[in-house]
Length: 341
Image (cartoon, rainbow, N blue to C red; front, side, top):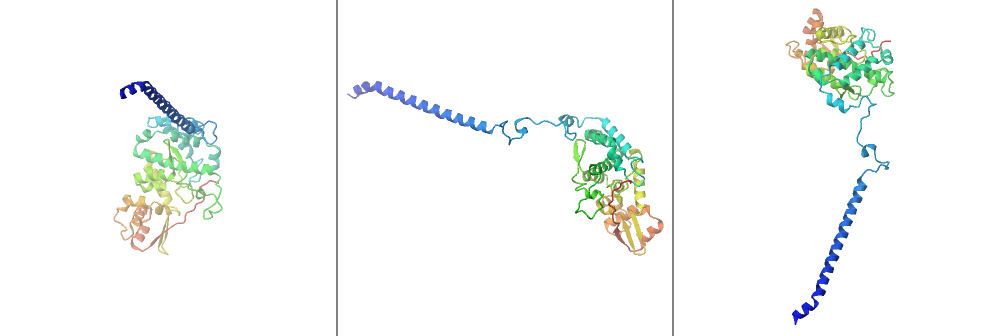
């Protein structure tokens, strides 16, 4: 009897099962389509809208290089930076020879900034070629050539910095320094940058990274101009490898035999030194002058300073310093701009 009933309703049961399958399949398709629509909506919301003013151009277009900005490094520069291209170095040296001349820099290191401001062809040439200069070219130079290059470059960058702000406008709160002083330029040694070898450097990085820390020669301290009358005297000839020792020795001699370098007051038992000695203490301590067995009753840095200046003193003054107690003090710096009037 049960079998008869099963066969009687078999068609109805199969129809119900087929209907259930169709309903399930339809429901599944609806849910899948809804999920896809949601994903598409999210993707379109995340995509940049060209009409959206809140989006920058770089969000909807690939980055491009502004060829009008000479300080913007190009991909071509980056590819060629280690390729040998000595022409840039030759052009830089030529520009330096045209800038460090008696016509623009006096024997006392005073610079005709107004002339350079009007006729700055060589300044522009040096700036452009310094940026293009390949590190591979400098790596092939001798020690003397590298020192000469970086001293010239430091002094050139100092001049170029002054020209950026010339005539210098004094800041009302900076009353401790003259109106026409590099000290009126905020962050002159740390926050002002120069393109060299397709990299940006400040004056402090050039001074320490490429000169003083690397070569530990205190004579270099007296070759680096800080654009002030009281600082190291700017030379009116560029430094050259073939006569570098002679030039550095001459720089030290000129500076230390002037009143801004050394003042010996025997009456008050005081030796006054330029603040350059104090500023570059680490350079003197790292030099051979700190190892000389002389003036051993003084502090380490004072011993290095005294051993350094000894060749530039008279025998009488040397005997005085060796036999008489004295104090070391520092000469007040004249921060007026080293400008030729």
